[in-house]
Image (cartoon, rainbow, N blue to C red; front, side):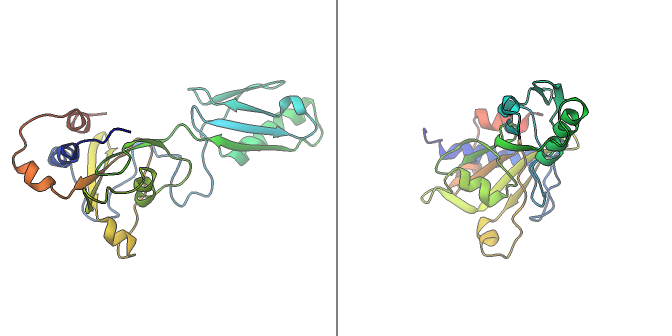
Length: 226
């Protein structure tokens, strides 16, 4: 993947001035649309575009892989459309079993598992080894999100300045975290949600920001409302 210029990280941190900031490592609230993937959640909640493995005992024709459509529904043989979005795999298993029990089976055993979690993604940018957009396959923290991008760039990154950008209450908000404090256990590792943008600052960004006059695509993306 092509290396992003360190100036992109500087542009992102310049954008902090254009968004309300929350102090502290635990003060950034969850997004408006609470993510299905959240630390502390006991089970993943299914979302649009997720791929599900559905296993129905004694009915091989119903054992298949299905994709959740944009409205959160799946299409099952014999049953028809079912609501999957917002349900846990266990809840959806029970829903399918209940429908089968009405007409076709006495005690159906249904197991639904998430094969691919495609609905929640986080953008990790700035001074990381592999900037990009990554799917959240389960509860994810800031440290884990940065690890998805193969960690901070050892030559460029300033791990004491890592920003999370998020929409809360209809506004773009942000908070800055210190990865060194999180790693040492002296600060909380905050939750990262789908549609968050994580930007790792560069060690030389301060001098760049003092002379920053141009515009970058990332800066425009971070400032304008989602």
